[in-house]
Length: 237
Image 1 (tube, rainbow, N blue to C red):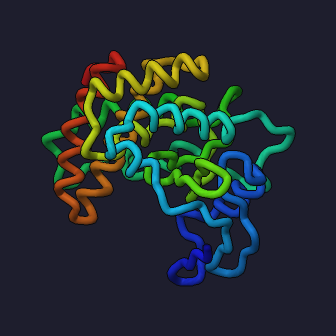
Image 2 (cartoon, rainbow, N blue to C red):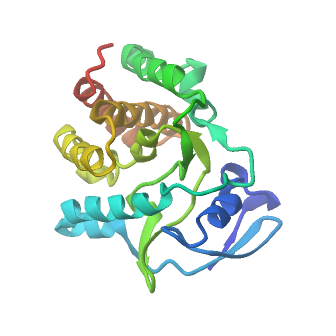
C-alpha cells in the first residue's frame, strides 16, 4: 500500500517511518520504502479489528489488541532513531487549558489535564509507544493482525491503551472499559487505575479536538465517557 500525505510532509505521522523500522514487522506492518510525503507499506489486509468487535466479537478483539500490543511493547536493544514526542506534546490541546466552547466541562477536562501534566514527562520506565493504538489501526492480513499508523511517543506503558477504551465508539462504556482494563492490567502487569486514567485523558483531548473540528456528535460521546472513566480511575474533579 502506498500512503500519500498532503503537502509532502508526514505531519502527525512524522515519526511513523522510524517506528516501523524499530518494530521491523513485529506487531506492525513493514515499511518497504519511503519518499517525501509518501510511504510504501506492507499490505495490512482489509479486515479491521473494529469490524471484528462490532460483529459481536468484542471480547476476542480485546485479546487480539493485547497480542498486538505485546509485540509492539516488547523490549528492544535500541530506541527508535528519532526524537520521540512526549505525552505532553501529544495532548497539547488538553494541556493548553483553553477548552473553548466546553467551559461547562472544565472540571472533568482539568482533572484529565492534571493527570497528563503529572505523568506525561519522560521518566525512568517510560518506553516507546505506538501512540494511537486502537481497533481501527489494527488489521488482519497475510501475516495476521498488525498495527498501522503509529505516532511514535515515549510514555508509560499504560498510556499505550488510552485510545482503546473509546473505540469503536458504538461500544464504548464504563463497564466495557473496566473489563478491558482488567485484561491489560493482568496481561502486562499494569496499574488498572492508570490505564483508565489515560483513557480519560484521551477522551478529554479527543473531545476538544472533535469539538474544534465540528464533530459535535463524537465530542459529546467523549464528554459522556470522560467522567465515567475518571470515576473508574478513582479521580474526582
